[in-house]
Image 1 (cartoon, rainbow, N blue to C red):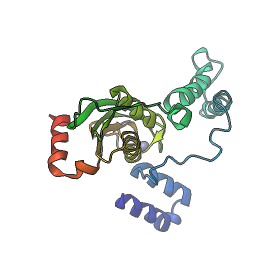
Image 2 (image 1 turned 90 degrees about the vertical axis):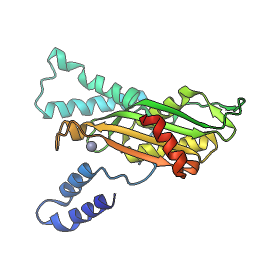
Image 3 (image 1 turned 30 degrees about the horizontal axis):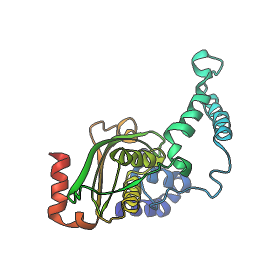
Image 4 (image 1 turned 90 degrees about the horizontal axis):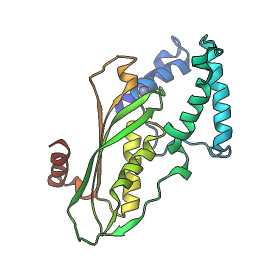
Length: 237
Ligand SMILES: [Zn+2]
């Protein structure tokens, strides 16, 4: 983050004469993956338009992008693409932008009085890099210690998926999942690790297909080294 902030400053100061301001900032932000806040930057009027209208408008705009690229939309294979992309954006990969799609999570009493760590590991994460609009693919590992309340295991997957299905920065996604779990489970004792491959790193830019990015957030009892190590032992074996 420090390095990213510095690069952004360099971009603002140093490159102003060489490149246009916007190009410099765009380039730096793109490769450094800066996250500006824990909340996804959403406009106040984000959901004034319903899904149907959004899909119609996105299809129109995507068609223009394809035309500018020089593609012939009369071709049978391409004709339906703008609508397919619009539907995929609104109903699938960016459906987690809309609070109406937030999973409903019921809280139960921890009737077994199980007060050890509960871990759910290898939760599939399919998200999208907000700087390049290409996939982030990986796994999330979640641990918590019950404060007397528990949630259904599949709800942890649903919370992860909800925050993954929006344009994201991996650090922010990690923090959003932690915040949601803390609020839902009414405890500070939450740990989240996400290990993911960014296609903007593997299929473009440096084209490094081997590297992955790991982000983690340890809170409450997980700040204790022994507890954190126990969690890590379970997820990495
Ligand atoms: Zn990216």
